[in-house]
Image (cartoon, rainbow, N blue to C red):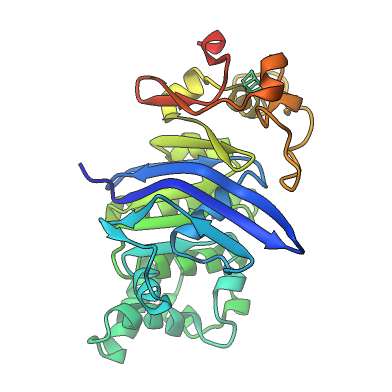
Length: 325
Ligand code: SF4
């Protein structure tokens, strides 16, 4: 079937002071109706830049976005005007960001903002109906005493409540796709779990496909159907969630999994991947992971591995992935 979202050979460069940083290169991403695809990686891996380039949320310049295909529901997103893009954002594509405070308008009550989100995409609704819908949405996302809270401003909400309000806005117009960028990173742990459950419920109720950007494999295990692992601006592995956790086929994925706290371990010592992600202004030659890779050898220092099919619909970009099988 036609994918809902189709990205082919995405590249994002940042041009500053005569230097060019290739933040994302050669990224393919397909999302099918109803599925949850997690895009995972450390900061600087290009996962957020990838998500933001879908609906052109990067400032261009300094960003320069290129793609062989960038389509939502078969519609080419590349040549769309800012106005056409606004009609998609918050409508058929709902967005949830890490920090709701920057995404919410501080001088508008929360209820008015949710109502605005409804009216922007359903202009025929009258204001009263939109407000009633806003309260209904706030109720759905578990904001207590929603009629009262709707009159409050974002600063009167806790971080978790603000994130709920943002989820209400993201689902206000029955989206086909939700893009969630580190939706729980700014929240404390107990609230994280609640917000995750909420995203899961919102996803089930709307049937929306979801692109979930996260560095947290615990979240991936809980929510995702399929996983795309990014490193240094490129996809290094893709697999179904069970296969990925069961048998990772890229040393970087293996490292990520080793640094995950385990319920069945009697120690809570983690094995983080040694070293740091590369400086993207000057990435290492060959495989960008080689300075940190436990099984790297000479070939890895000169030849960049391509992302290849390795069976079962999986892909890996490692010269020696079969050694992990
Ligand atoms: Fe490690 Fe080489 Fe595979 Fe890169 S290509 S992940 S350096 S083994």
